[in-house]
Length: 226
Image: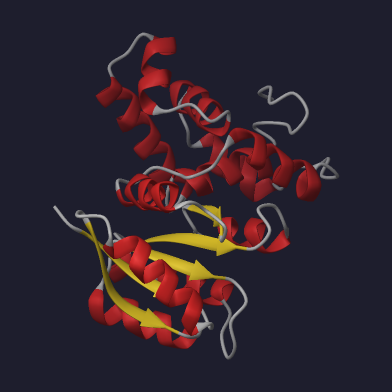
């Protein structure tokens, strides 16, 4: 099954390079390109790709605003956004993850790593290394000492098992690893993850990670539960 990819970058040479890298894989195909946020939102609504490779800094509408529009559109629920950035950890990446992006990737990525990243995101997984995630959270959330009432209410909707699974997702564990540690089947682990996302309104695992830290369920320093 071919994974359909849309490219969004204001530099034509950058788009051309990624187009070659994506199309060189037999299971990947570029279905369209855009030079700014407005164009990519229109492109995604028209073509409904599986994955969008999204640059952050673009004219007219930047990649953050475009990501928010795409992930907020219920008709585009199956579309995943993979943010491309010159700097692996910065405020743009953090904002993109909060907006619903499924992960981020440096623009200097190798061809095989880019292709695999697209596959990972397309199947619904988050492209987040635990180290990079902790770096982001520590930088932008470590000063938070109070948990908003709304966040507490949202967490209260989770079962104890769903909270445990959410903590493990935030620690970077896959469904298979969660299943092994909790002695449940991978299918059951995936079900718990999906239920937690549904109850919290998380677009995907990446947002679930952000919510785990923002609500105080996981702390940056120790990653221990409240």
